[in-house]
Length: 253
Image (cartoon, rainbow, N blue to C red; front, side, top):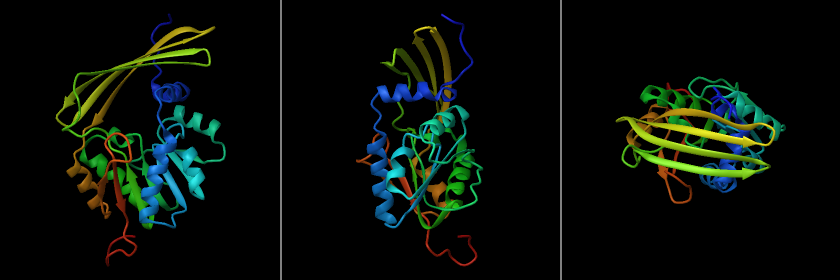
């Protein structure tokens, strides 16, 4: 076995994809659910920006339903995989708290709990404000939350074993409550491949346990309506906001 590597999972997009493919993550069904919610509120939506797009798992399917799609992500390892797999879809490096695409979209989405990487109300407010700033009047924001304070399970141990293309990947995680408003997940990976042996790396992810009220505040401060929908999307549902078509006098559009 090699010494522990400094690589994190977001630097290894191909391993990330193999793990979640092996765990049965259904990007198509999730994308279809998000698209239905967007169309319900903006039937003519033609353009979409996926913020925190990762390796492009959702973008692949959004491209089938929207005329123009793009992605933004903060990790080059994930973007590299997206660019190889989806050369026809523009993906860009950017921080969801402060990115600039130079145009507006009919829909801005942030899925797979990427918003949980924000820390504190100020960062949540900044991210939602950026989504609104890149949205056309009448456009739709869709955000998938991380756990809420009341349903996070501390001391949870998770595991998965994925084998394919001659490679075996073991993932083991342990989650604790870092504070009243944040969780910490320590994750270890073993990757075994012919000709390469076995390598180990680990990650620690600290994620905010935002409450419904904190999302409500962030959407309201950005000038968006907000509703929480559940039932047709896994996990903790979706927060959906709509930008007014006509802004009140003195406010930005």
